[in-house]
Length: 437
Image (tube, rainbow, N blue to C red; front, side, top):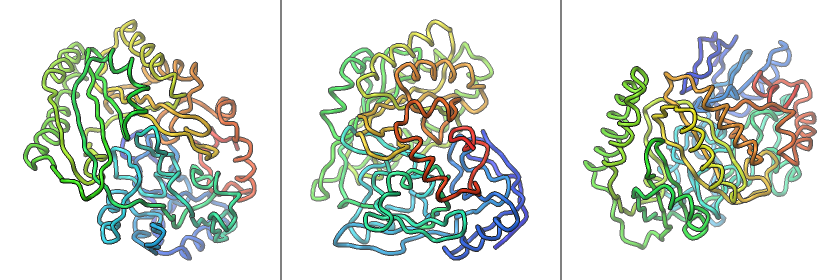
């Protein structure tokens, strides 16, 4: 299906574009035809999933491929626990799609609105010192290259391309399907509790190594942080989910509804922010529950924000976080959104933020009606001082020249890009900035 382009916005309203043409393919062959037609017309072409990236990574000035209709399960290898999914499948659809086979993703982030192809292409990740991001769970994929060729990449077909293609930023082609290595469905025992911030910082490395999944959220202007500790259990264990009404009060009424009001008031009257944060600190209670993994990993978020997240060597997290806290105090900023701290295992993907090193993540946010530039650039300077790598789907201010210094395989990725898209059919201004022309 082809349509004239209307103005497209991403979720956070940080990017917008009016593509010359919008196409909604329903098959891999339709994607091939669209790429070939764009090439003949001398137009660039980009796929878009859920538009949940904060950067312009999916901005399409020429042809925009809306992959919404390229969705669902294509094949299942039950013995191997591998599931092939169409590229536009949303992460929030996976629990229902995988349940009949008793399978689940090995790890997830706390947002599940993204498409599976967009999530792997930008390096979406969760937390857990022994676990990688979504791209590390991809064992095969099929993409349409710059000349319209349908290229399958797996452990046995074009295997040399896997380290580049599993996290390819959309720069190597249009992904039409991915094969995910799943695990047997499992439960998570979750404990969420407010603890003294200094104690959490001091023990972060030990706690990240001691439990399956550990993360915490610190609201600036407070002395405590909300810790989240998740332990993996088999589905034979007893479930003890949160009561439906209690979960609605915590996650919808307070975390979304009331928080939206406080962010709005804080934007209009910034001196109110520290008081709101200290009030939230006092309201934080203990939650202890056990449920299926997606219901624990994922949190519904409806308050719009802007985000920057940096990956740094795991051991550097405590010092970097102390520097960010000191920075906020020194500048006298009023920050209404929390700082999120997570971890991940090292992997071997060329453009992964965890490539070659155990990694800690520090994410900073601002309400979408606030200008994040001063805060984000100052925090970025701290992170770069620790060898930081920015999340590809979140706001940052680096370019190809600086990124080459923190990615040992940067030039190898560039050579694969030259091979698969020599005419730069899949580029856009963001990719030109971070990868070069």
